[in-house]
Image 1: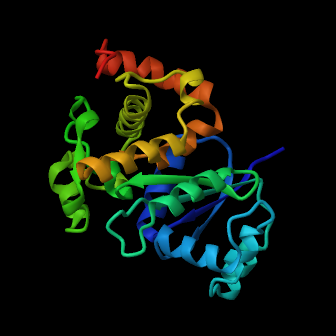
Image 2: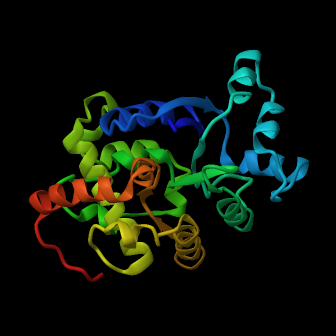
Length: 261
């Protein structure tokens, strides 16, 4: 059966990067994009107050009631095989609630039911906050709570490689490096291993576990790791195939690396 996918994004910039990512890793999926135009925290506040986050919630029906226009309503009324939500952690947001966010990560855990949620830390712009796509500085890159709400997008642009400044100019090699480094970092955060995970390990790296680690670091240390998980949408479609391909490039690009923190 062919895949007909709906991506729900926070803003238009998310859509630009998403389309570039999907065009790089062509997998035959047909997809549509619904731009929610507000934060995950406002979405969750409204969802909890109106319907809760129970197994019997019809999330698509909820979305259709969120001030959608005729075109958006017709889009949401279509049948999709998978739904993916791409949002920012945004811990500086006035409606940030770590417990509610964790509950949402558990609720949005299956793309074929209510959808699967991917959080970017602290924002989507983490994809360009890589100082050197050929190095490992990104693995240790953190951002302080105080800096997240003070033009993080500008910080990511100024501290990240200029090669990543223009989405339209990110070629397949750069996109692979963005993906590899974020996969390595997710493995480091959850398992303490600074290596590219294979498919078996990757399938055990949950969004809930990453969020728990990040939330604890923010609460106890006042920082989070910069991490982009939205790039994992191409891995989830075919983990063995994509990670196998990336594994070959990983060895040629980076060679052997230290497995420990």
